[in-house]
Length: 116
Image 1 (cartoon, one colour):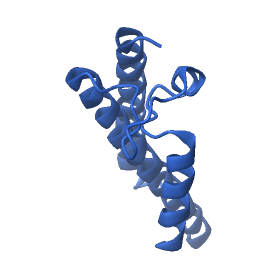
Image 2 (image 1 turned 180 degrees about the vertical axis):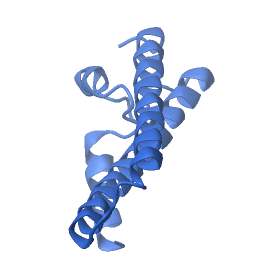
Image 3 (image 1 turned 30 degrees about the vertical axis):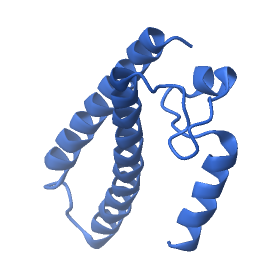
């Protein structure tokens, strides 16, 4: 995947996430007055928790997208952020926001799960 193609894909991904976040924010603001009884309140709280988890995932993805866009502008896109090895073309095509090779990504994932 060329950096220009990756940049287009990353910008589209970022725009989609930001648009989704704006729509969710509007939905939260308009539905706050619709809680008339305890069951409605419980359902609303559950929905808010689901949306909070979704926003956290989107925030993490946005961070990774921004890092990948920065790497494109620096000319280092396609290199692992940790070991600087070249990333697999198929991995970049499937996930243009990827910033780590598979071994480093697995190691990073194991470390992050240990600290949660």
